[in-house]
Length: 174
Image (cartoon, rainbow, N blue to C red):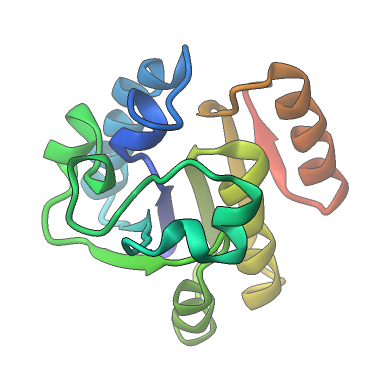
């Protein structure tokens, strides 16, 4: 497989749950279509899941963002909409923080020509995992499709796309 799609945290709590925001739901058909296209081309799809325990509010992240979300096994932790239906038996990486150490380790062992990231939240978890992908595979083209990512704050989203471009991530559909 030459190409990889990483669907980052497209979970209920980020779309219409505890940390949901207007416009996040509009990504669903775009992400589901990307998943279908990657599969049709014989390429790989993996998912990350923001994953917290009941003690979330006691963690460093919970103290800085005191809104319980993506509690393992809860409805908010599940994937959203058509993206959830499209998942299948794809590899998943649960992550307690913004970036996935397990995804990074897996990428070090599984080279790809290109790695595309989509999902939520652009200025937090998408950028964190894009940096990890770029670090794990410096010769792979790392891609972020602006149509398939979002943040609650549109100004921060634009600045994040600038930062991604600055670290040689290919930003599409800006």
